[in-house]
Image (cartoon, rainbow, N blue to C red; front, side, top):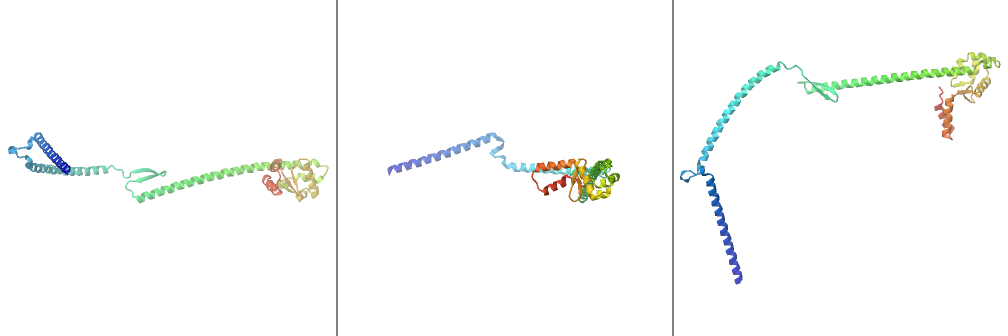
Amino acid sequence: MNTDVILLIIAVAGLLVTFATTLYLVGYFRSASSSSVEEKDPRQAVAGGVPRNNNRGGLRALRHRRQGAAVVNENAEHRAQAVEVHDGADNDVEEATRYIPPICHLHRHVDNIIVDRVVGTSRKAMQKELKRQEREQLRKAHRKRMEAADADDAAREADLEAMRLRQEAEDQVEFDKWRALISVEDAGTDADVVDGSVDGSNLLMQAHKVVVLEDVAAEFGLRTEDARDRVAALVASGRLSGLLDDRGKFVSISDHEMNAVATYIRTQGRLTLHDLGRECNRLVRFD
C-alpha cells in the first residue's frame, strides 16, 4: 500500500515538472520571435511606441483611388483610339472593295471532282453544282465504256471476217481435191462419169462434209449402186477420206479429224457408243 502511494506521488511530480518545462520553453521562443521581428522592421514603431498599423487603411484607400483614376483615363484613351480605328477602317474597306474581284474561285478535290466554289454561294447551290459535275463524270465514264465496247465489237467482227476468209480458202482447197478425185481418169470405163465430172462442181460444193449417194448418182447420171461403188473405190485407194454408212450417205473426214478421234479412243480405252458419238460430234466439223 505504501509503495503504491509513493509511485503515484512520483508520477504526479514528473507530470508537473514536464508541464512547467513546456510552459517555459513556449514563453522563451515567443519572446525571441517577437524581438527578431522588431529588429527586422523598425519602421513599424512610431514615437510613443504606437505602431503604424492604423495608417494602413488610409494608404490603401488612396492607392485604390489613384488606380481607379488611371483606369478611367486608360479607358478614355482606348475609346478615342477605337473611334479613330473605326473611321479609318471604313475608309480602308471602301478602298479595298474597289479592287476585290467580283468572283473568287476556290478549287478543292472531292473524289477526283474539281468543285468551283464561288465565294458567297449558298450550300444548296454548292450541292447542286457538285451533283451536276458528278453526273457529267458518270456520263463521260459511260461514254468511254461504250467506246471500248464498240472497239471490242469491231475487233471481234474483224476476227470473224478473217476466219470466214480462211474457211473459204479451205473450202476451195477441198473443192479442188474433190474435183481431182472425180476426174477423167476413168474416161474409158464409164462415159457418164466422164461427162458428169465436168459439171461436178455443183455436187462438190454440196458434198463438202456429207454427201447423199442418191444425189451423186442423179448429178452424174449414174445408178445409186454405181455411185456407191465409185466412192468406195476412191476411199479404198486413199484418194478420199471418209465413211460410208448404211443409209446411203458419205461423210468426209479429214486426216486431222481422223487422228483426233483415234487419239481420243486410245487415251480413253473402253468407252460406250454414246461417248464416242458425242466426242466425234465435237471433233469432226460437219458444217
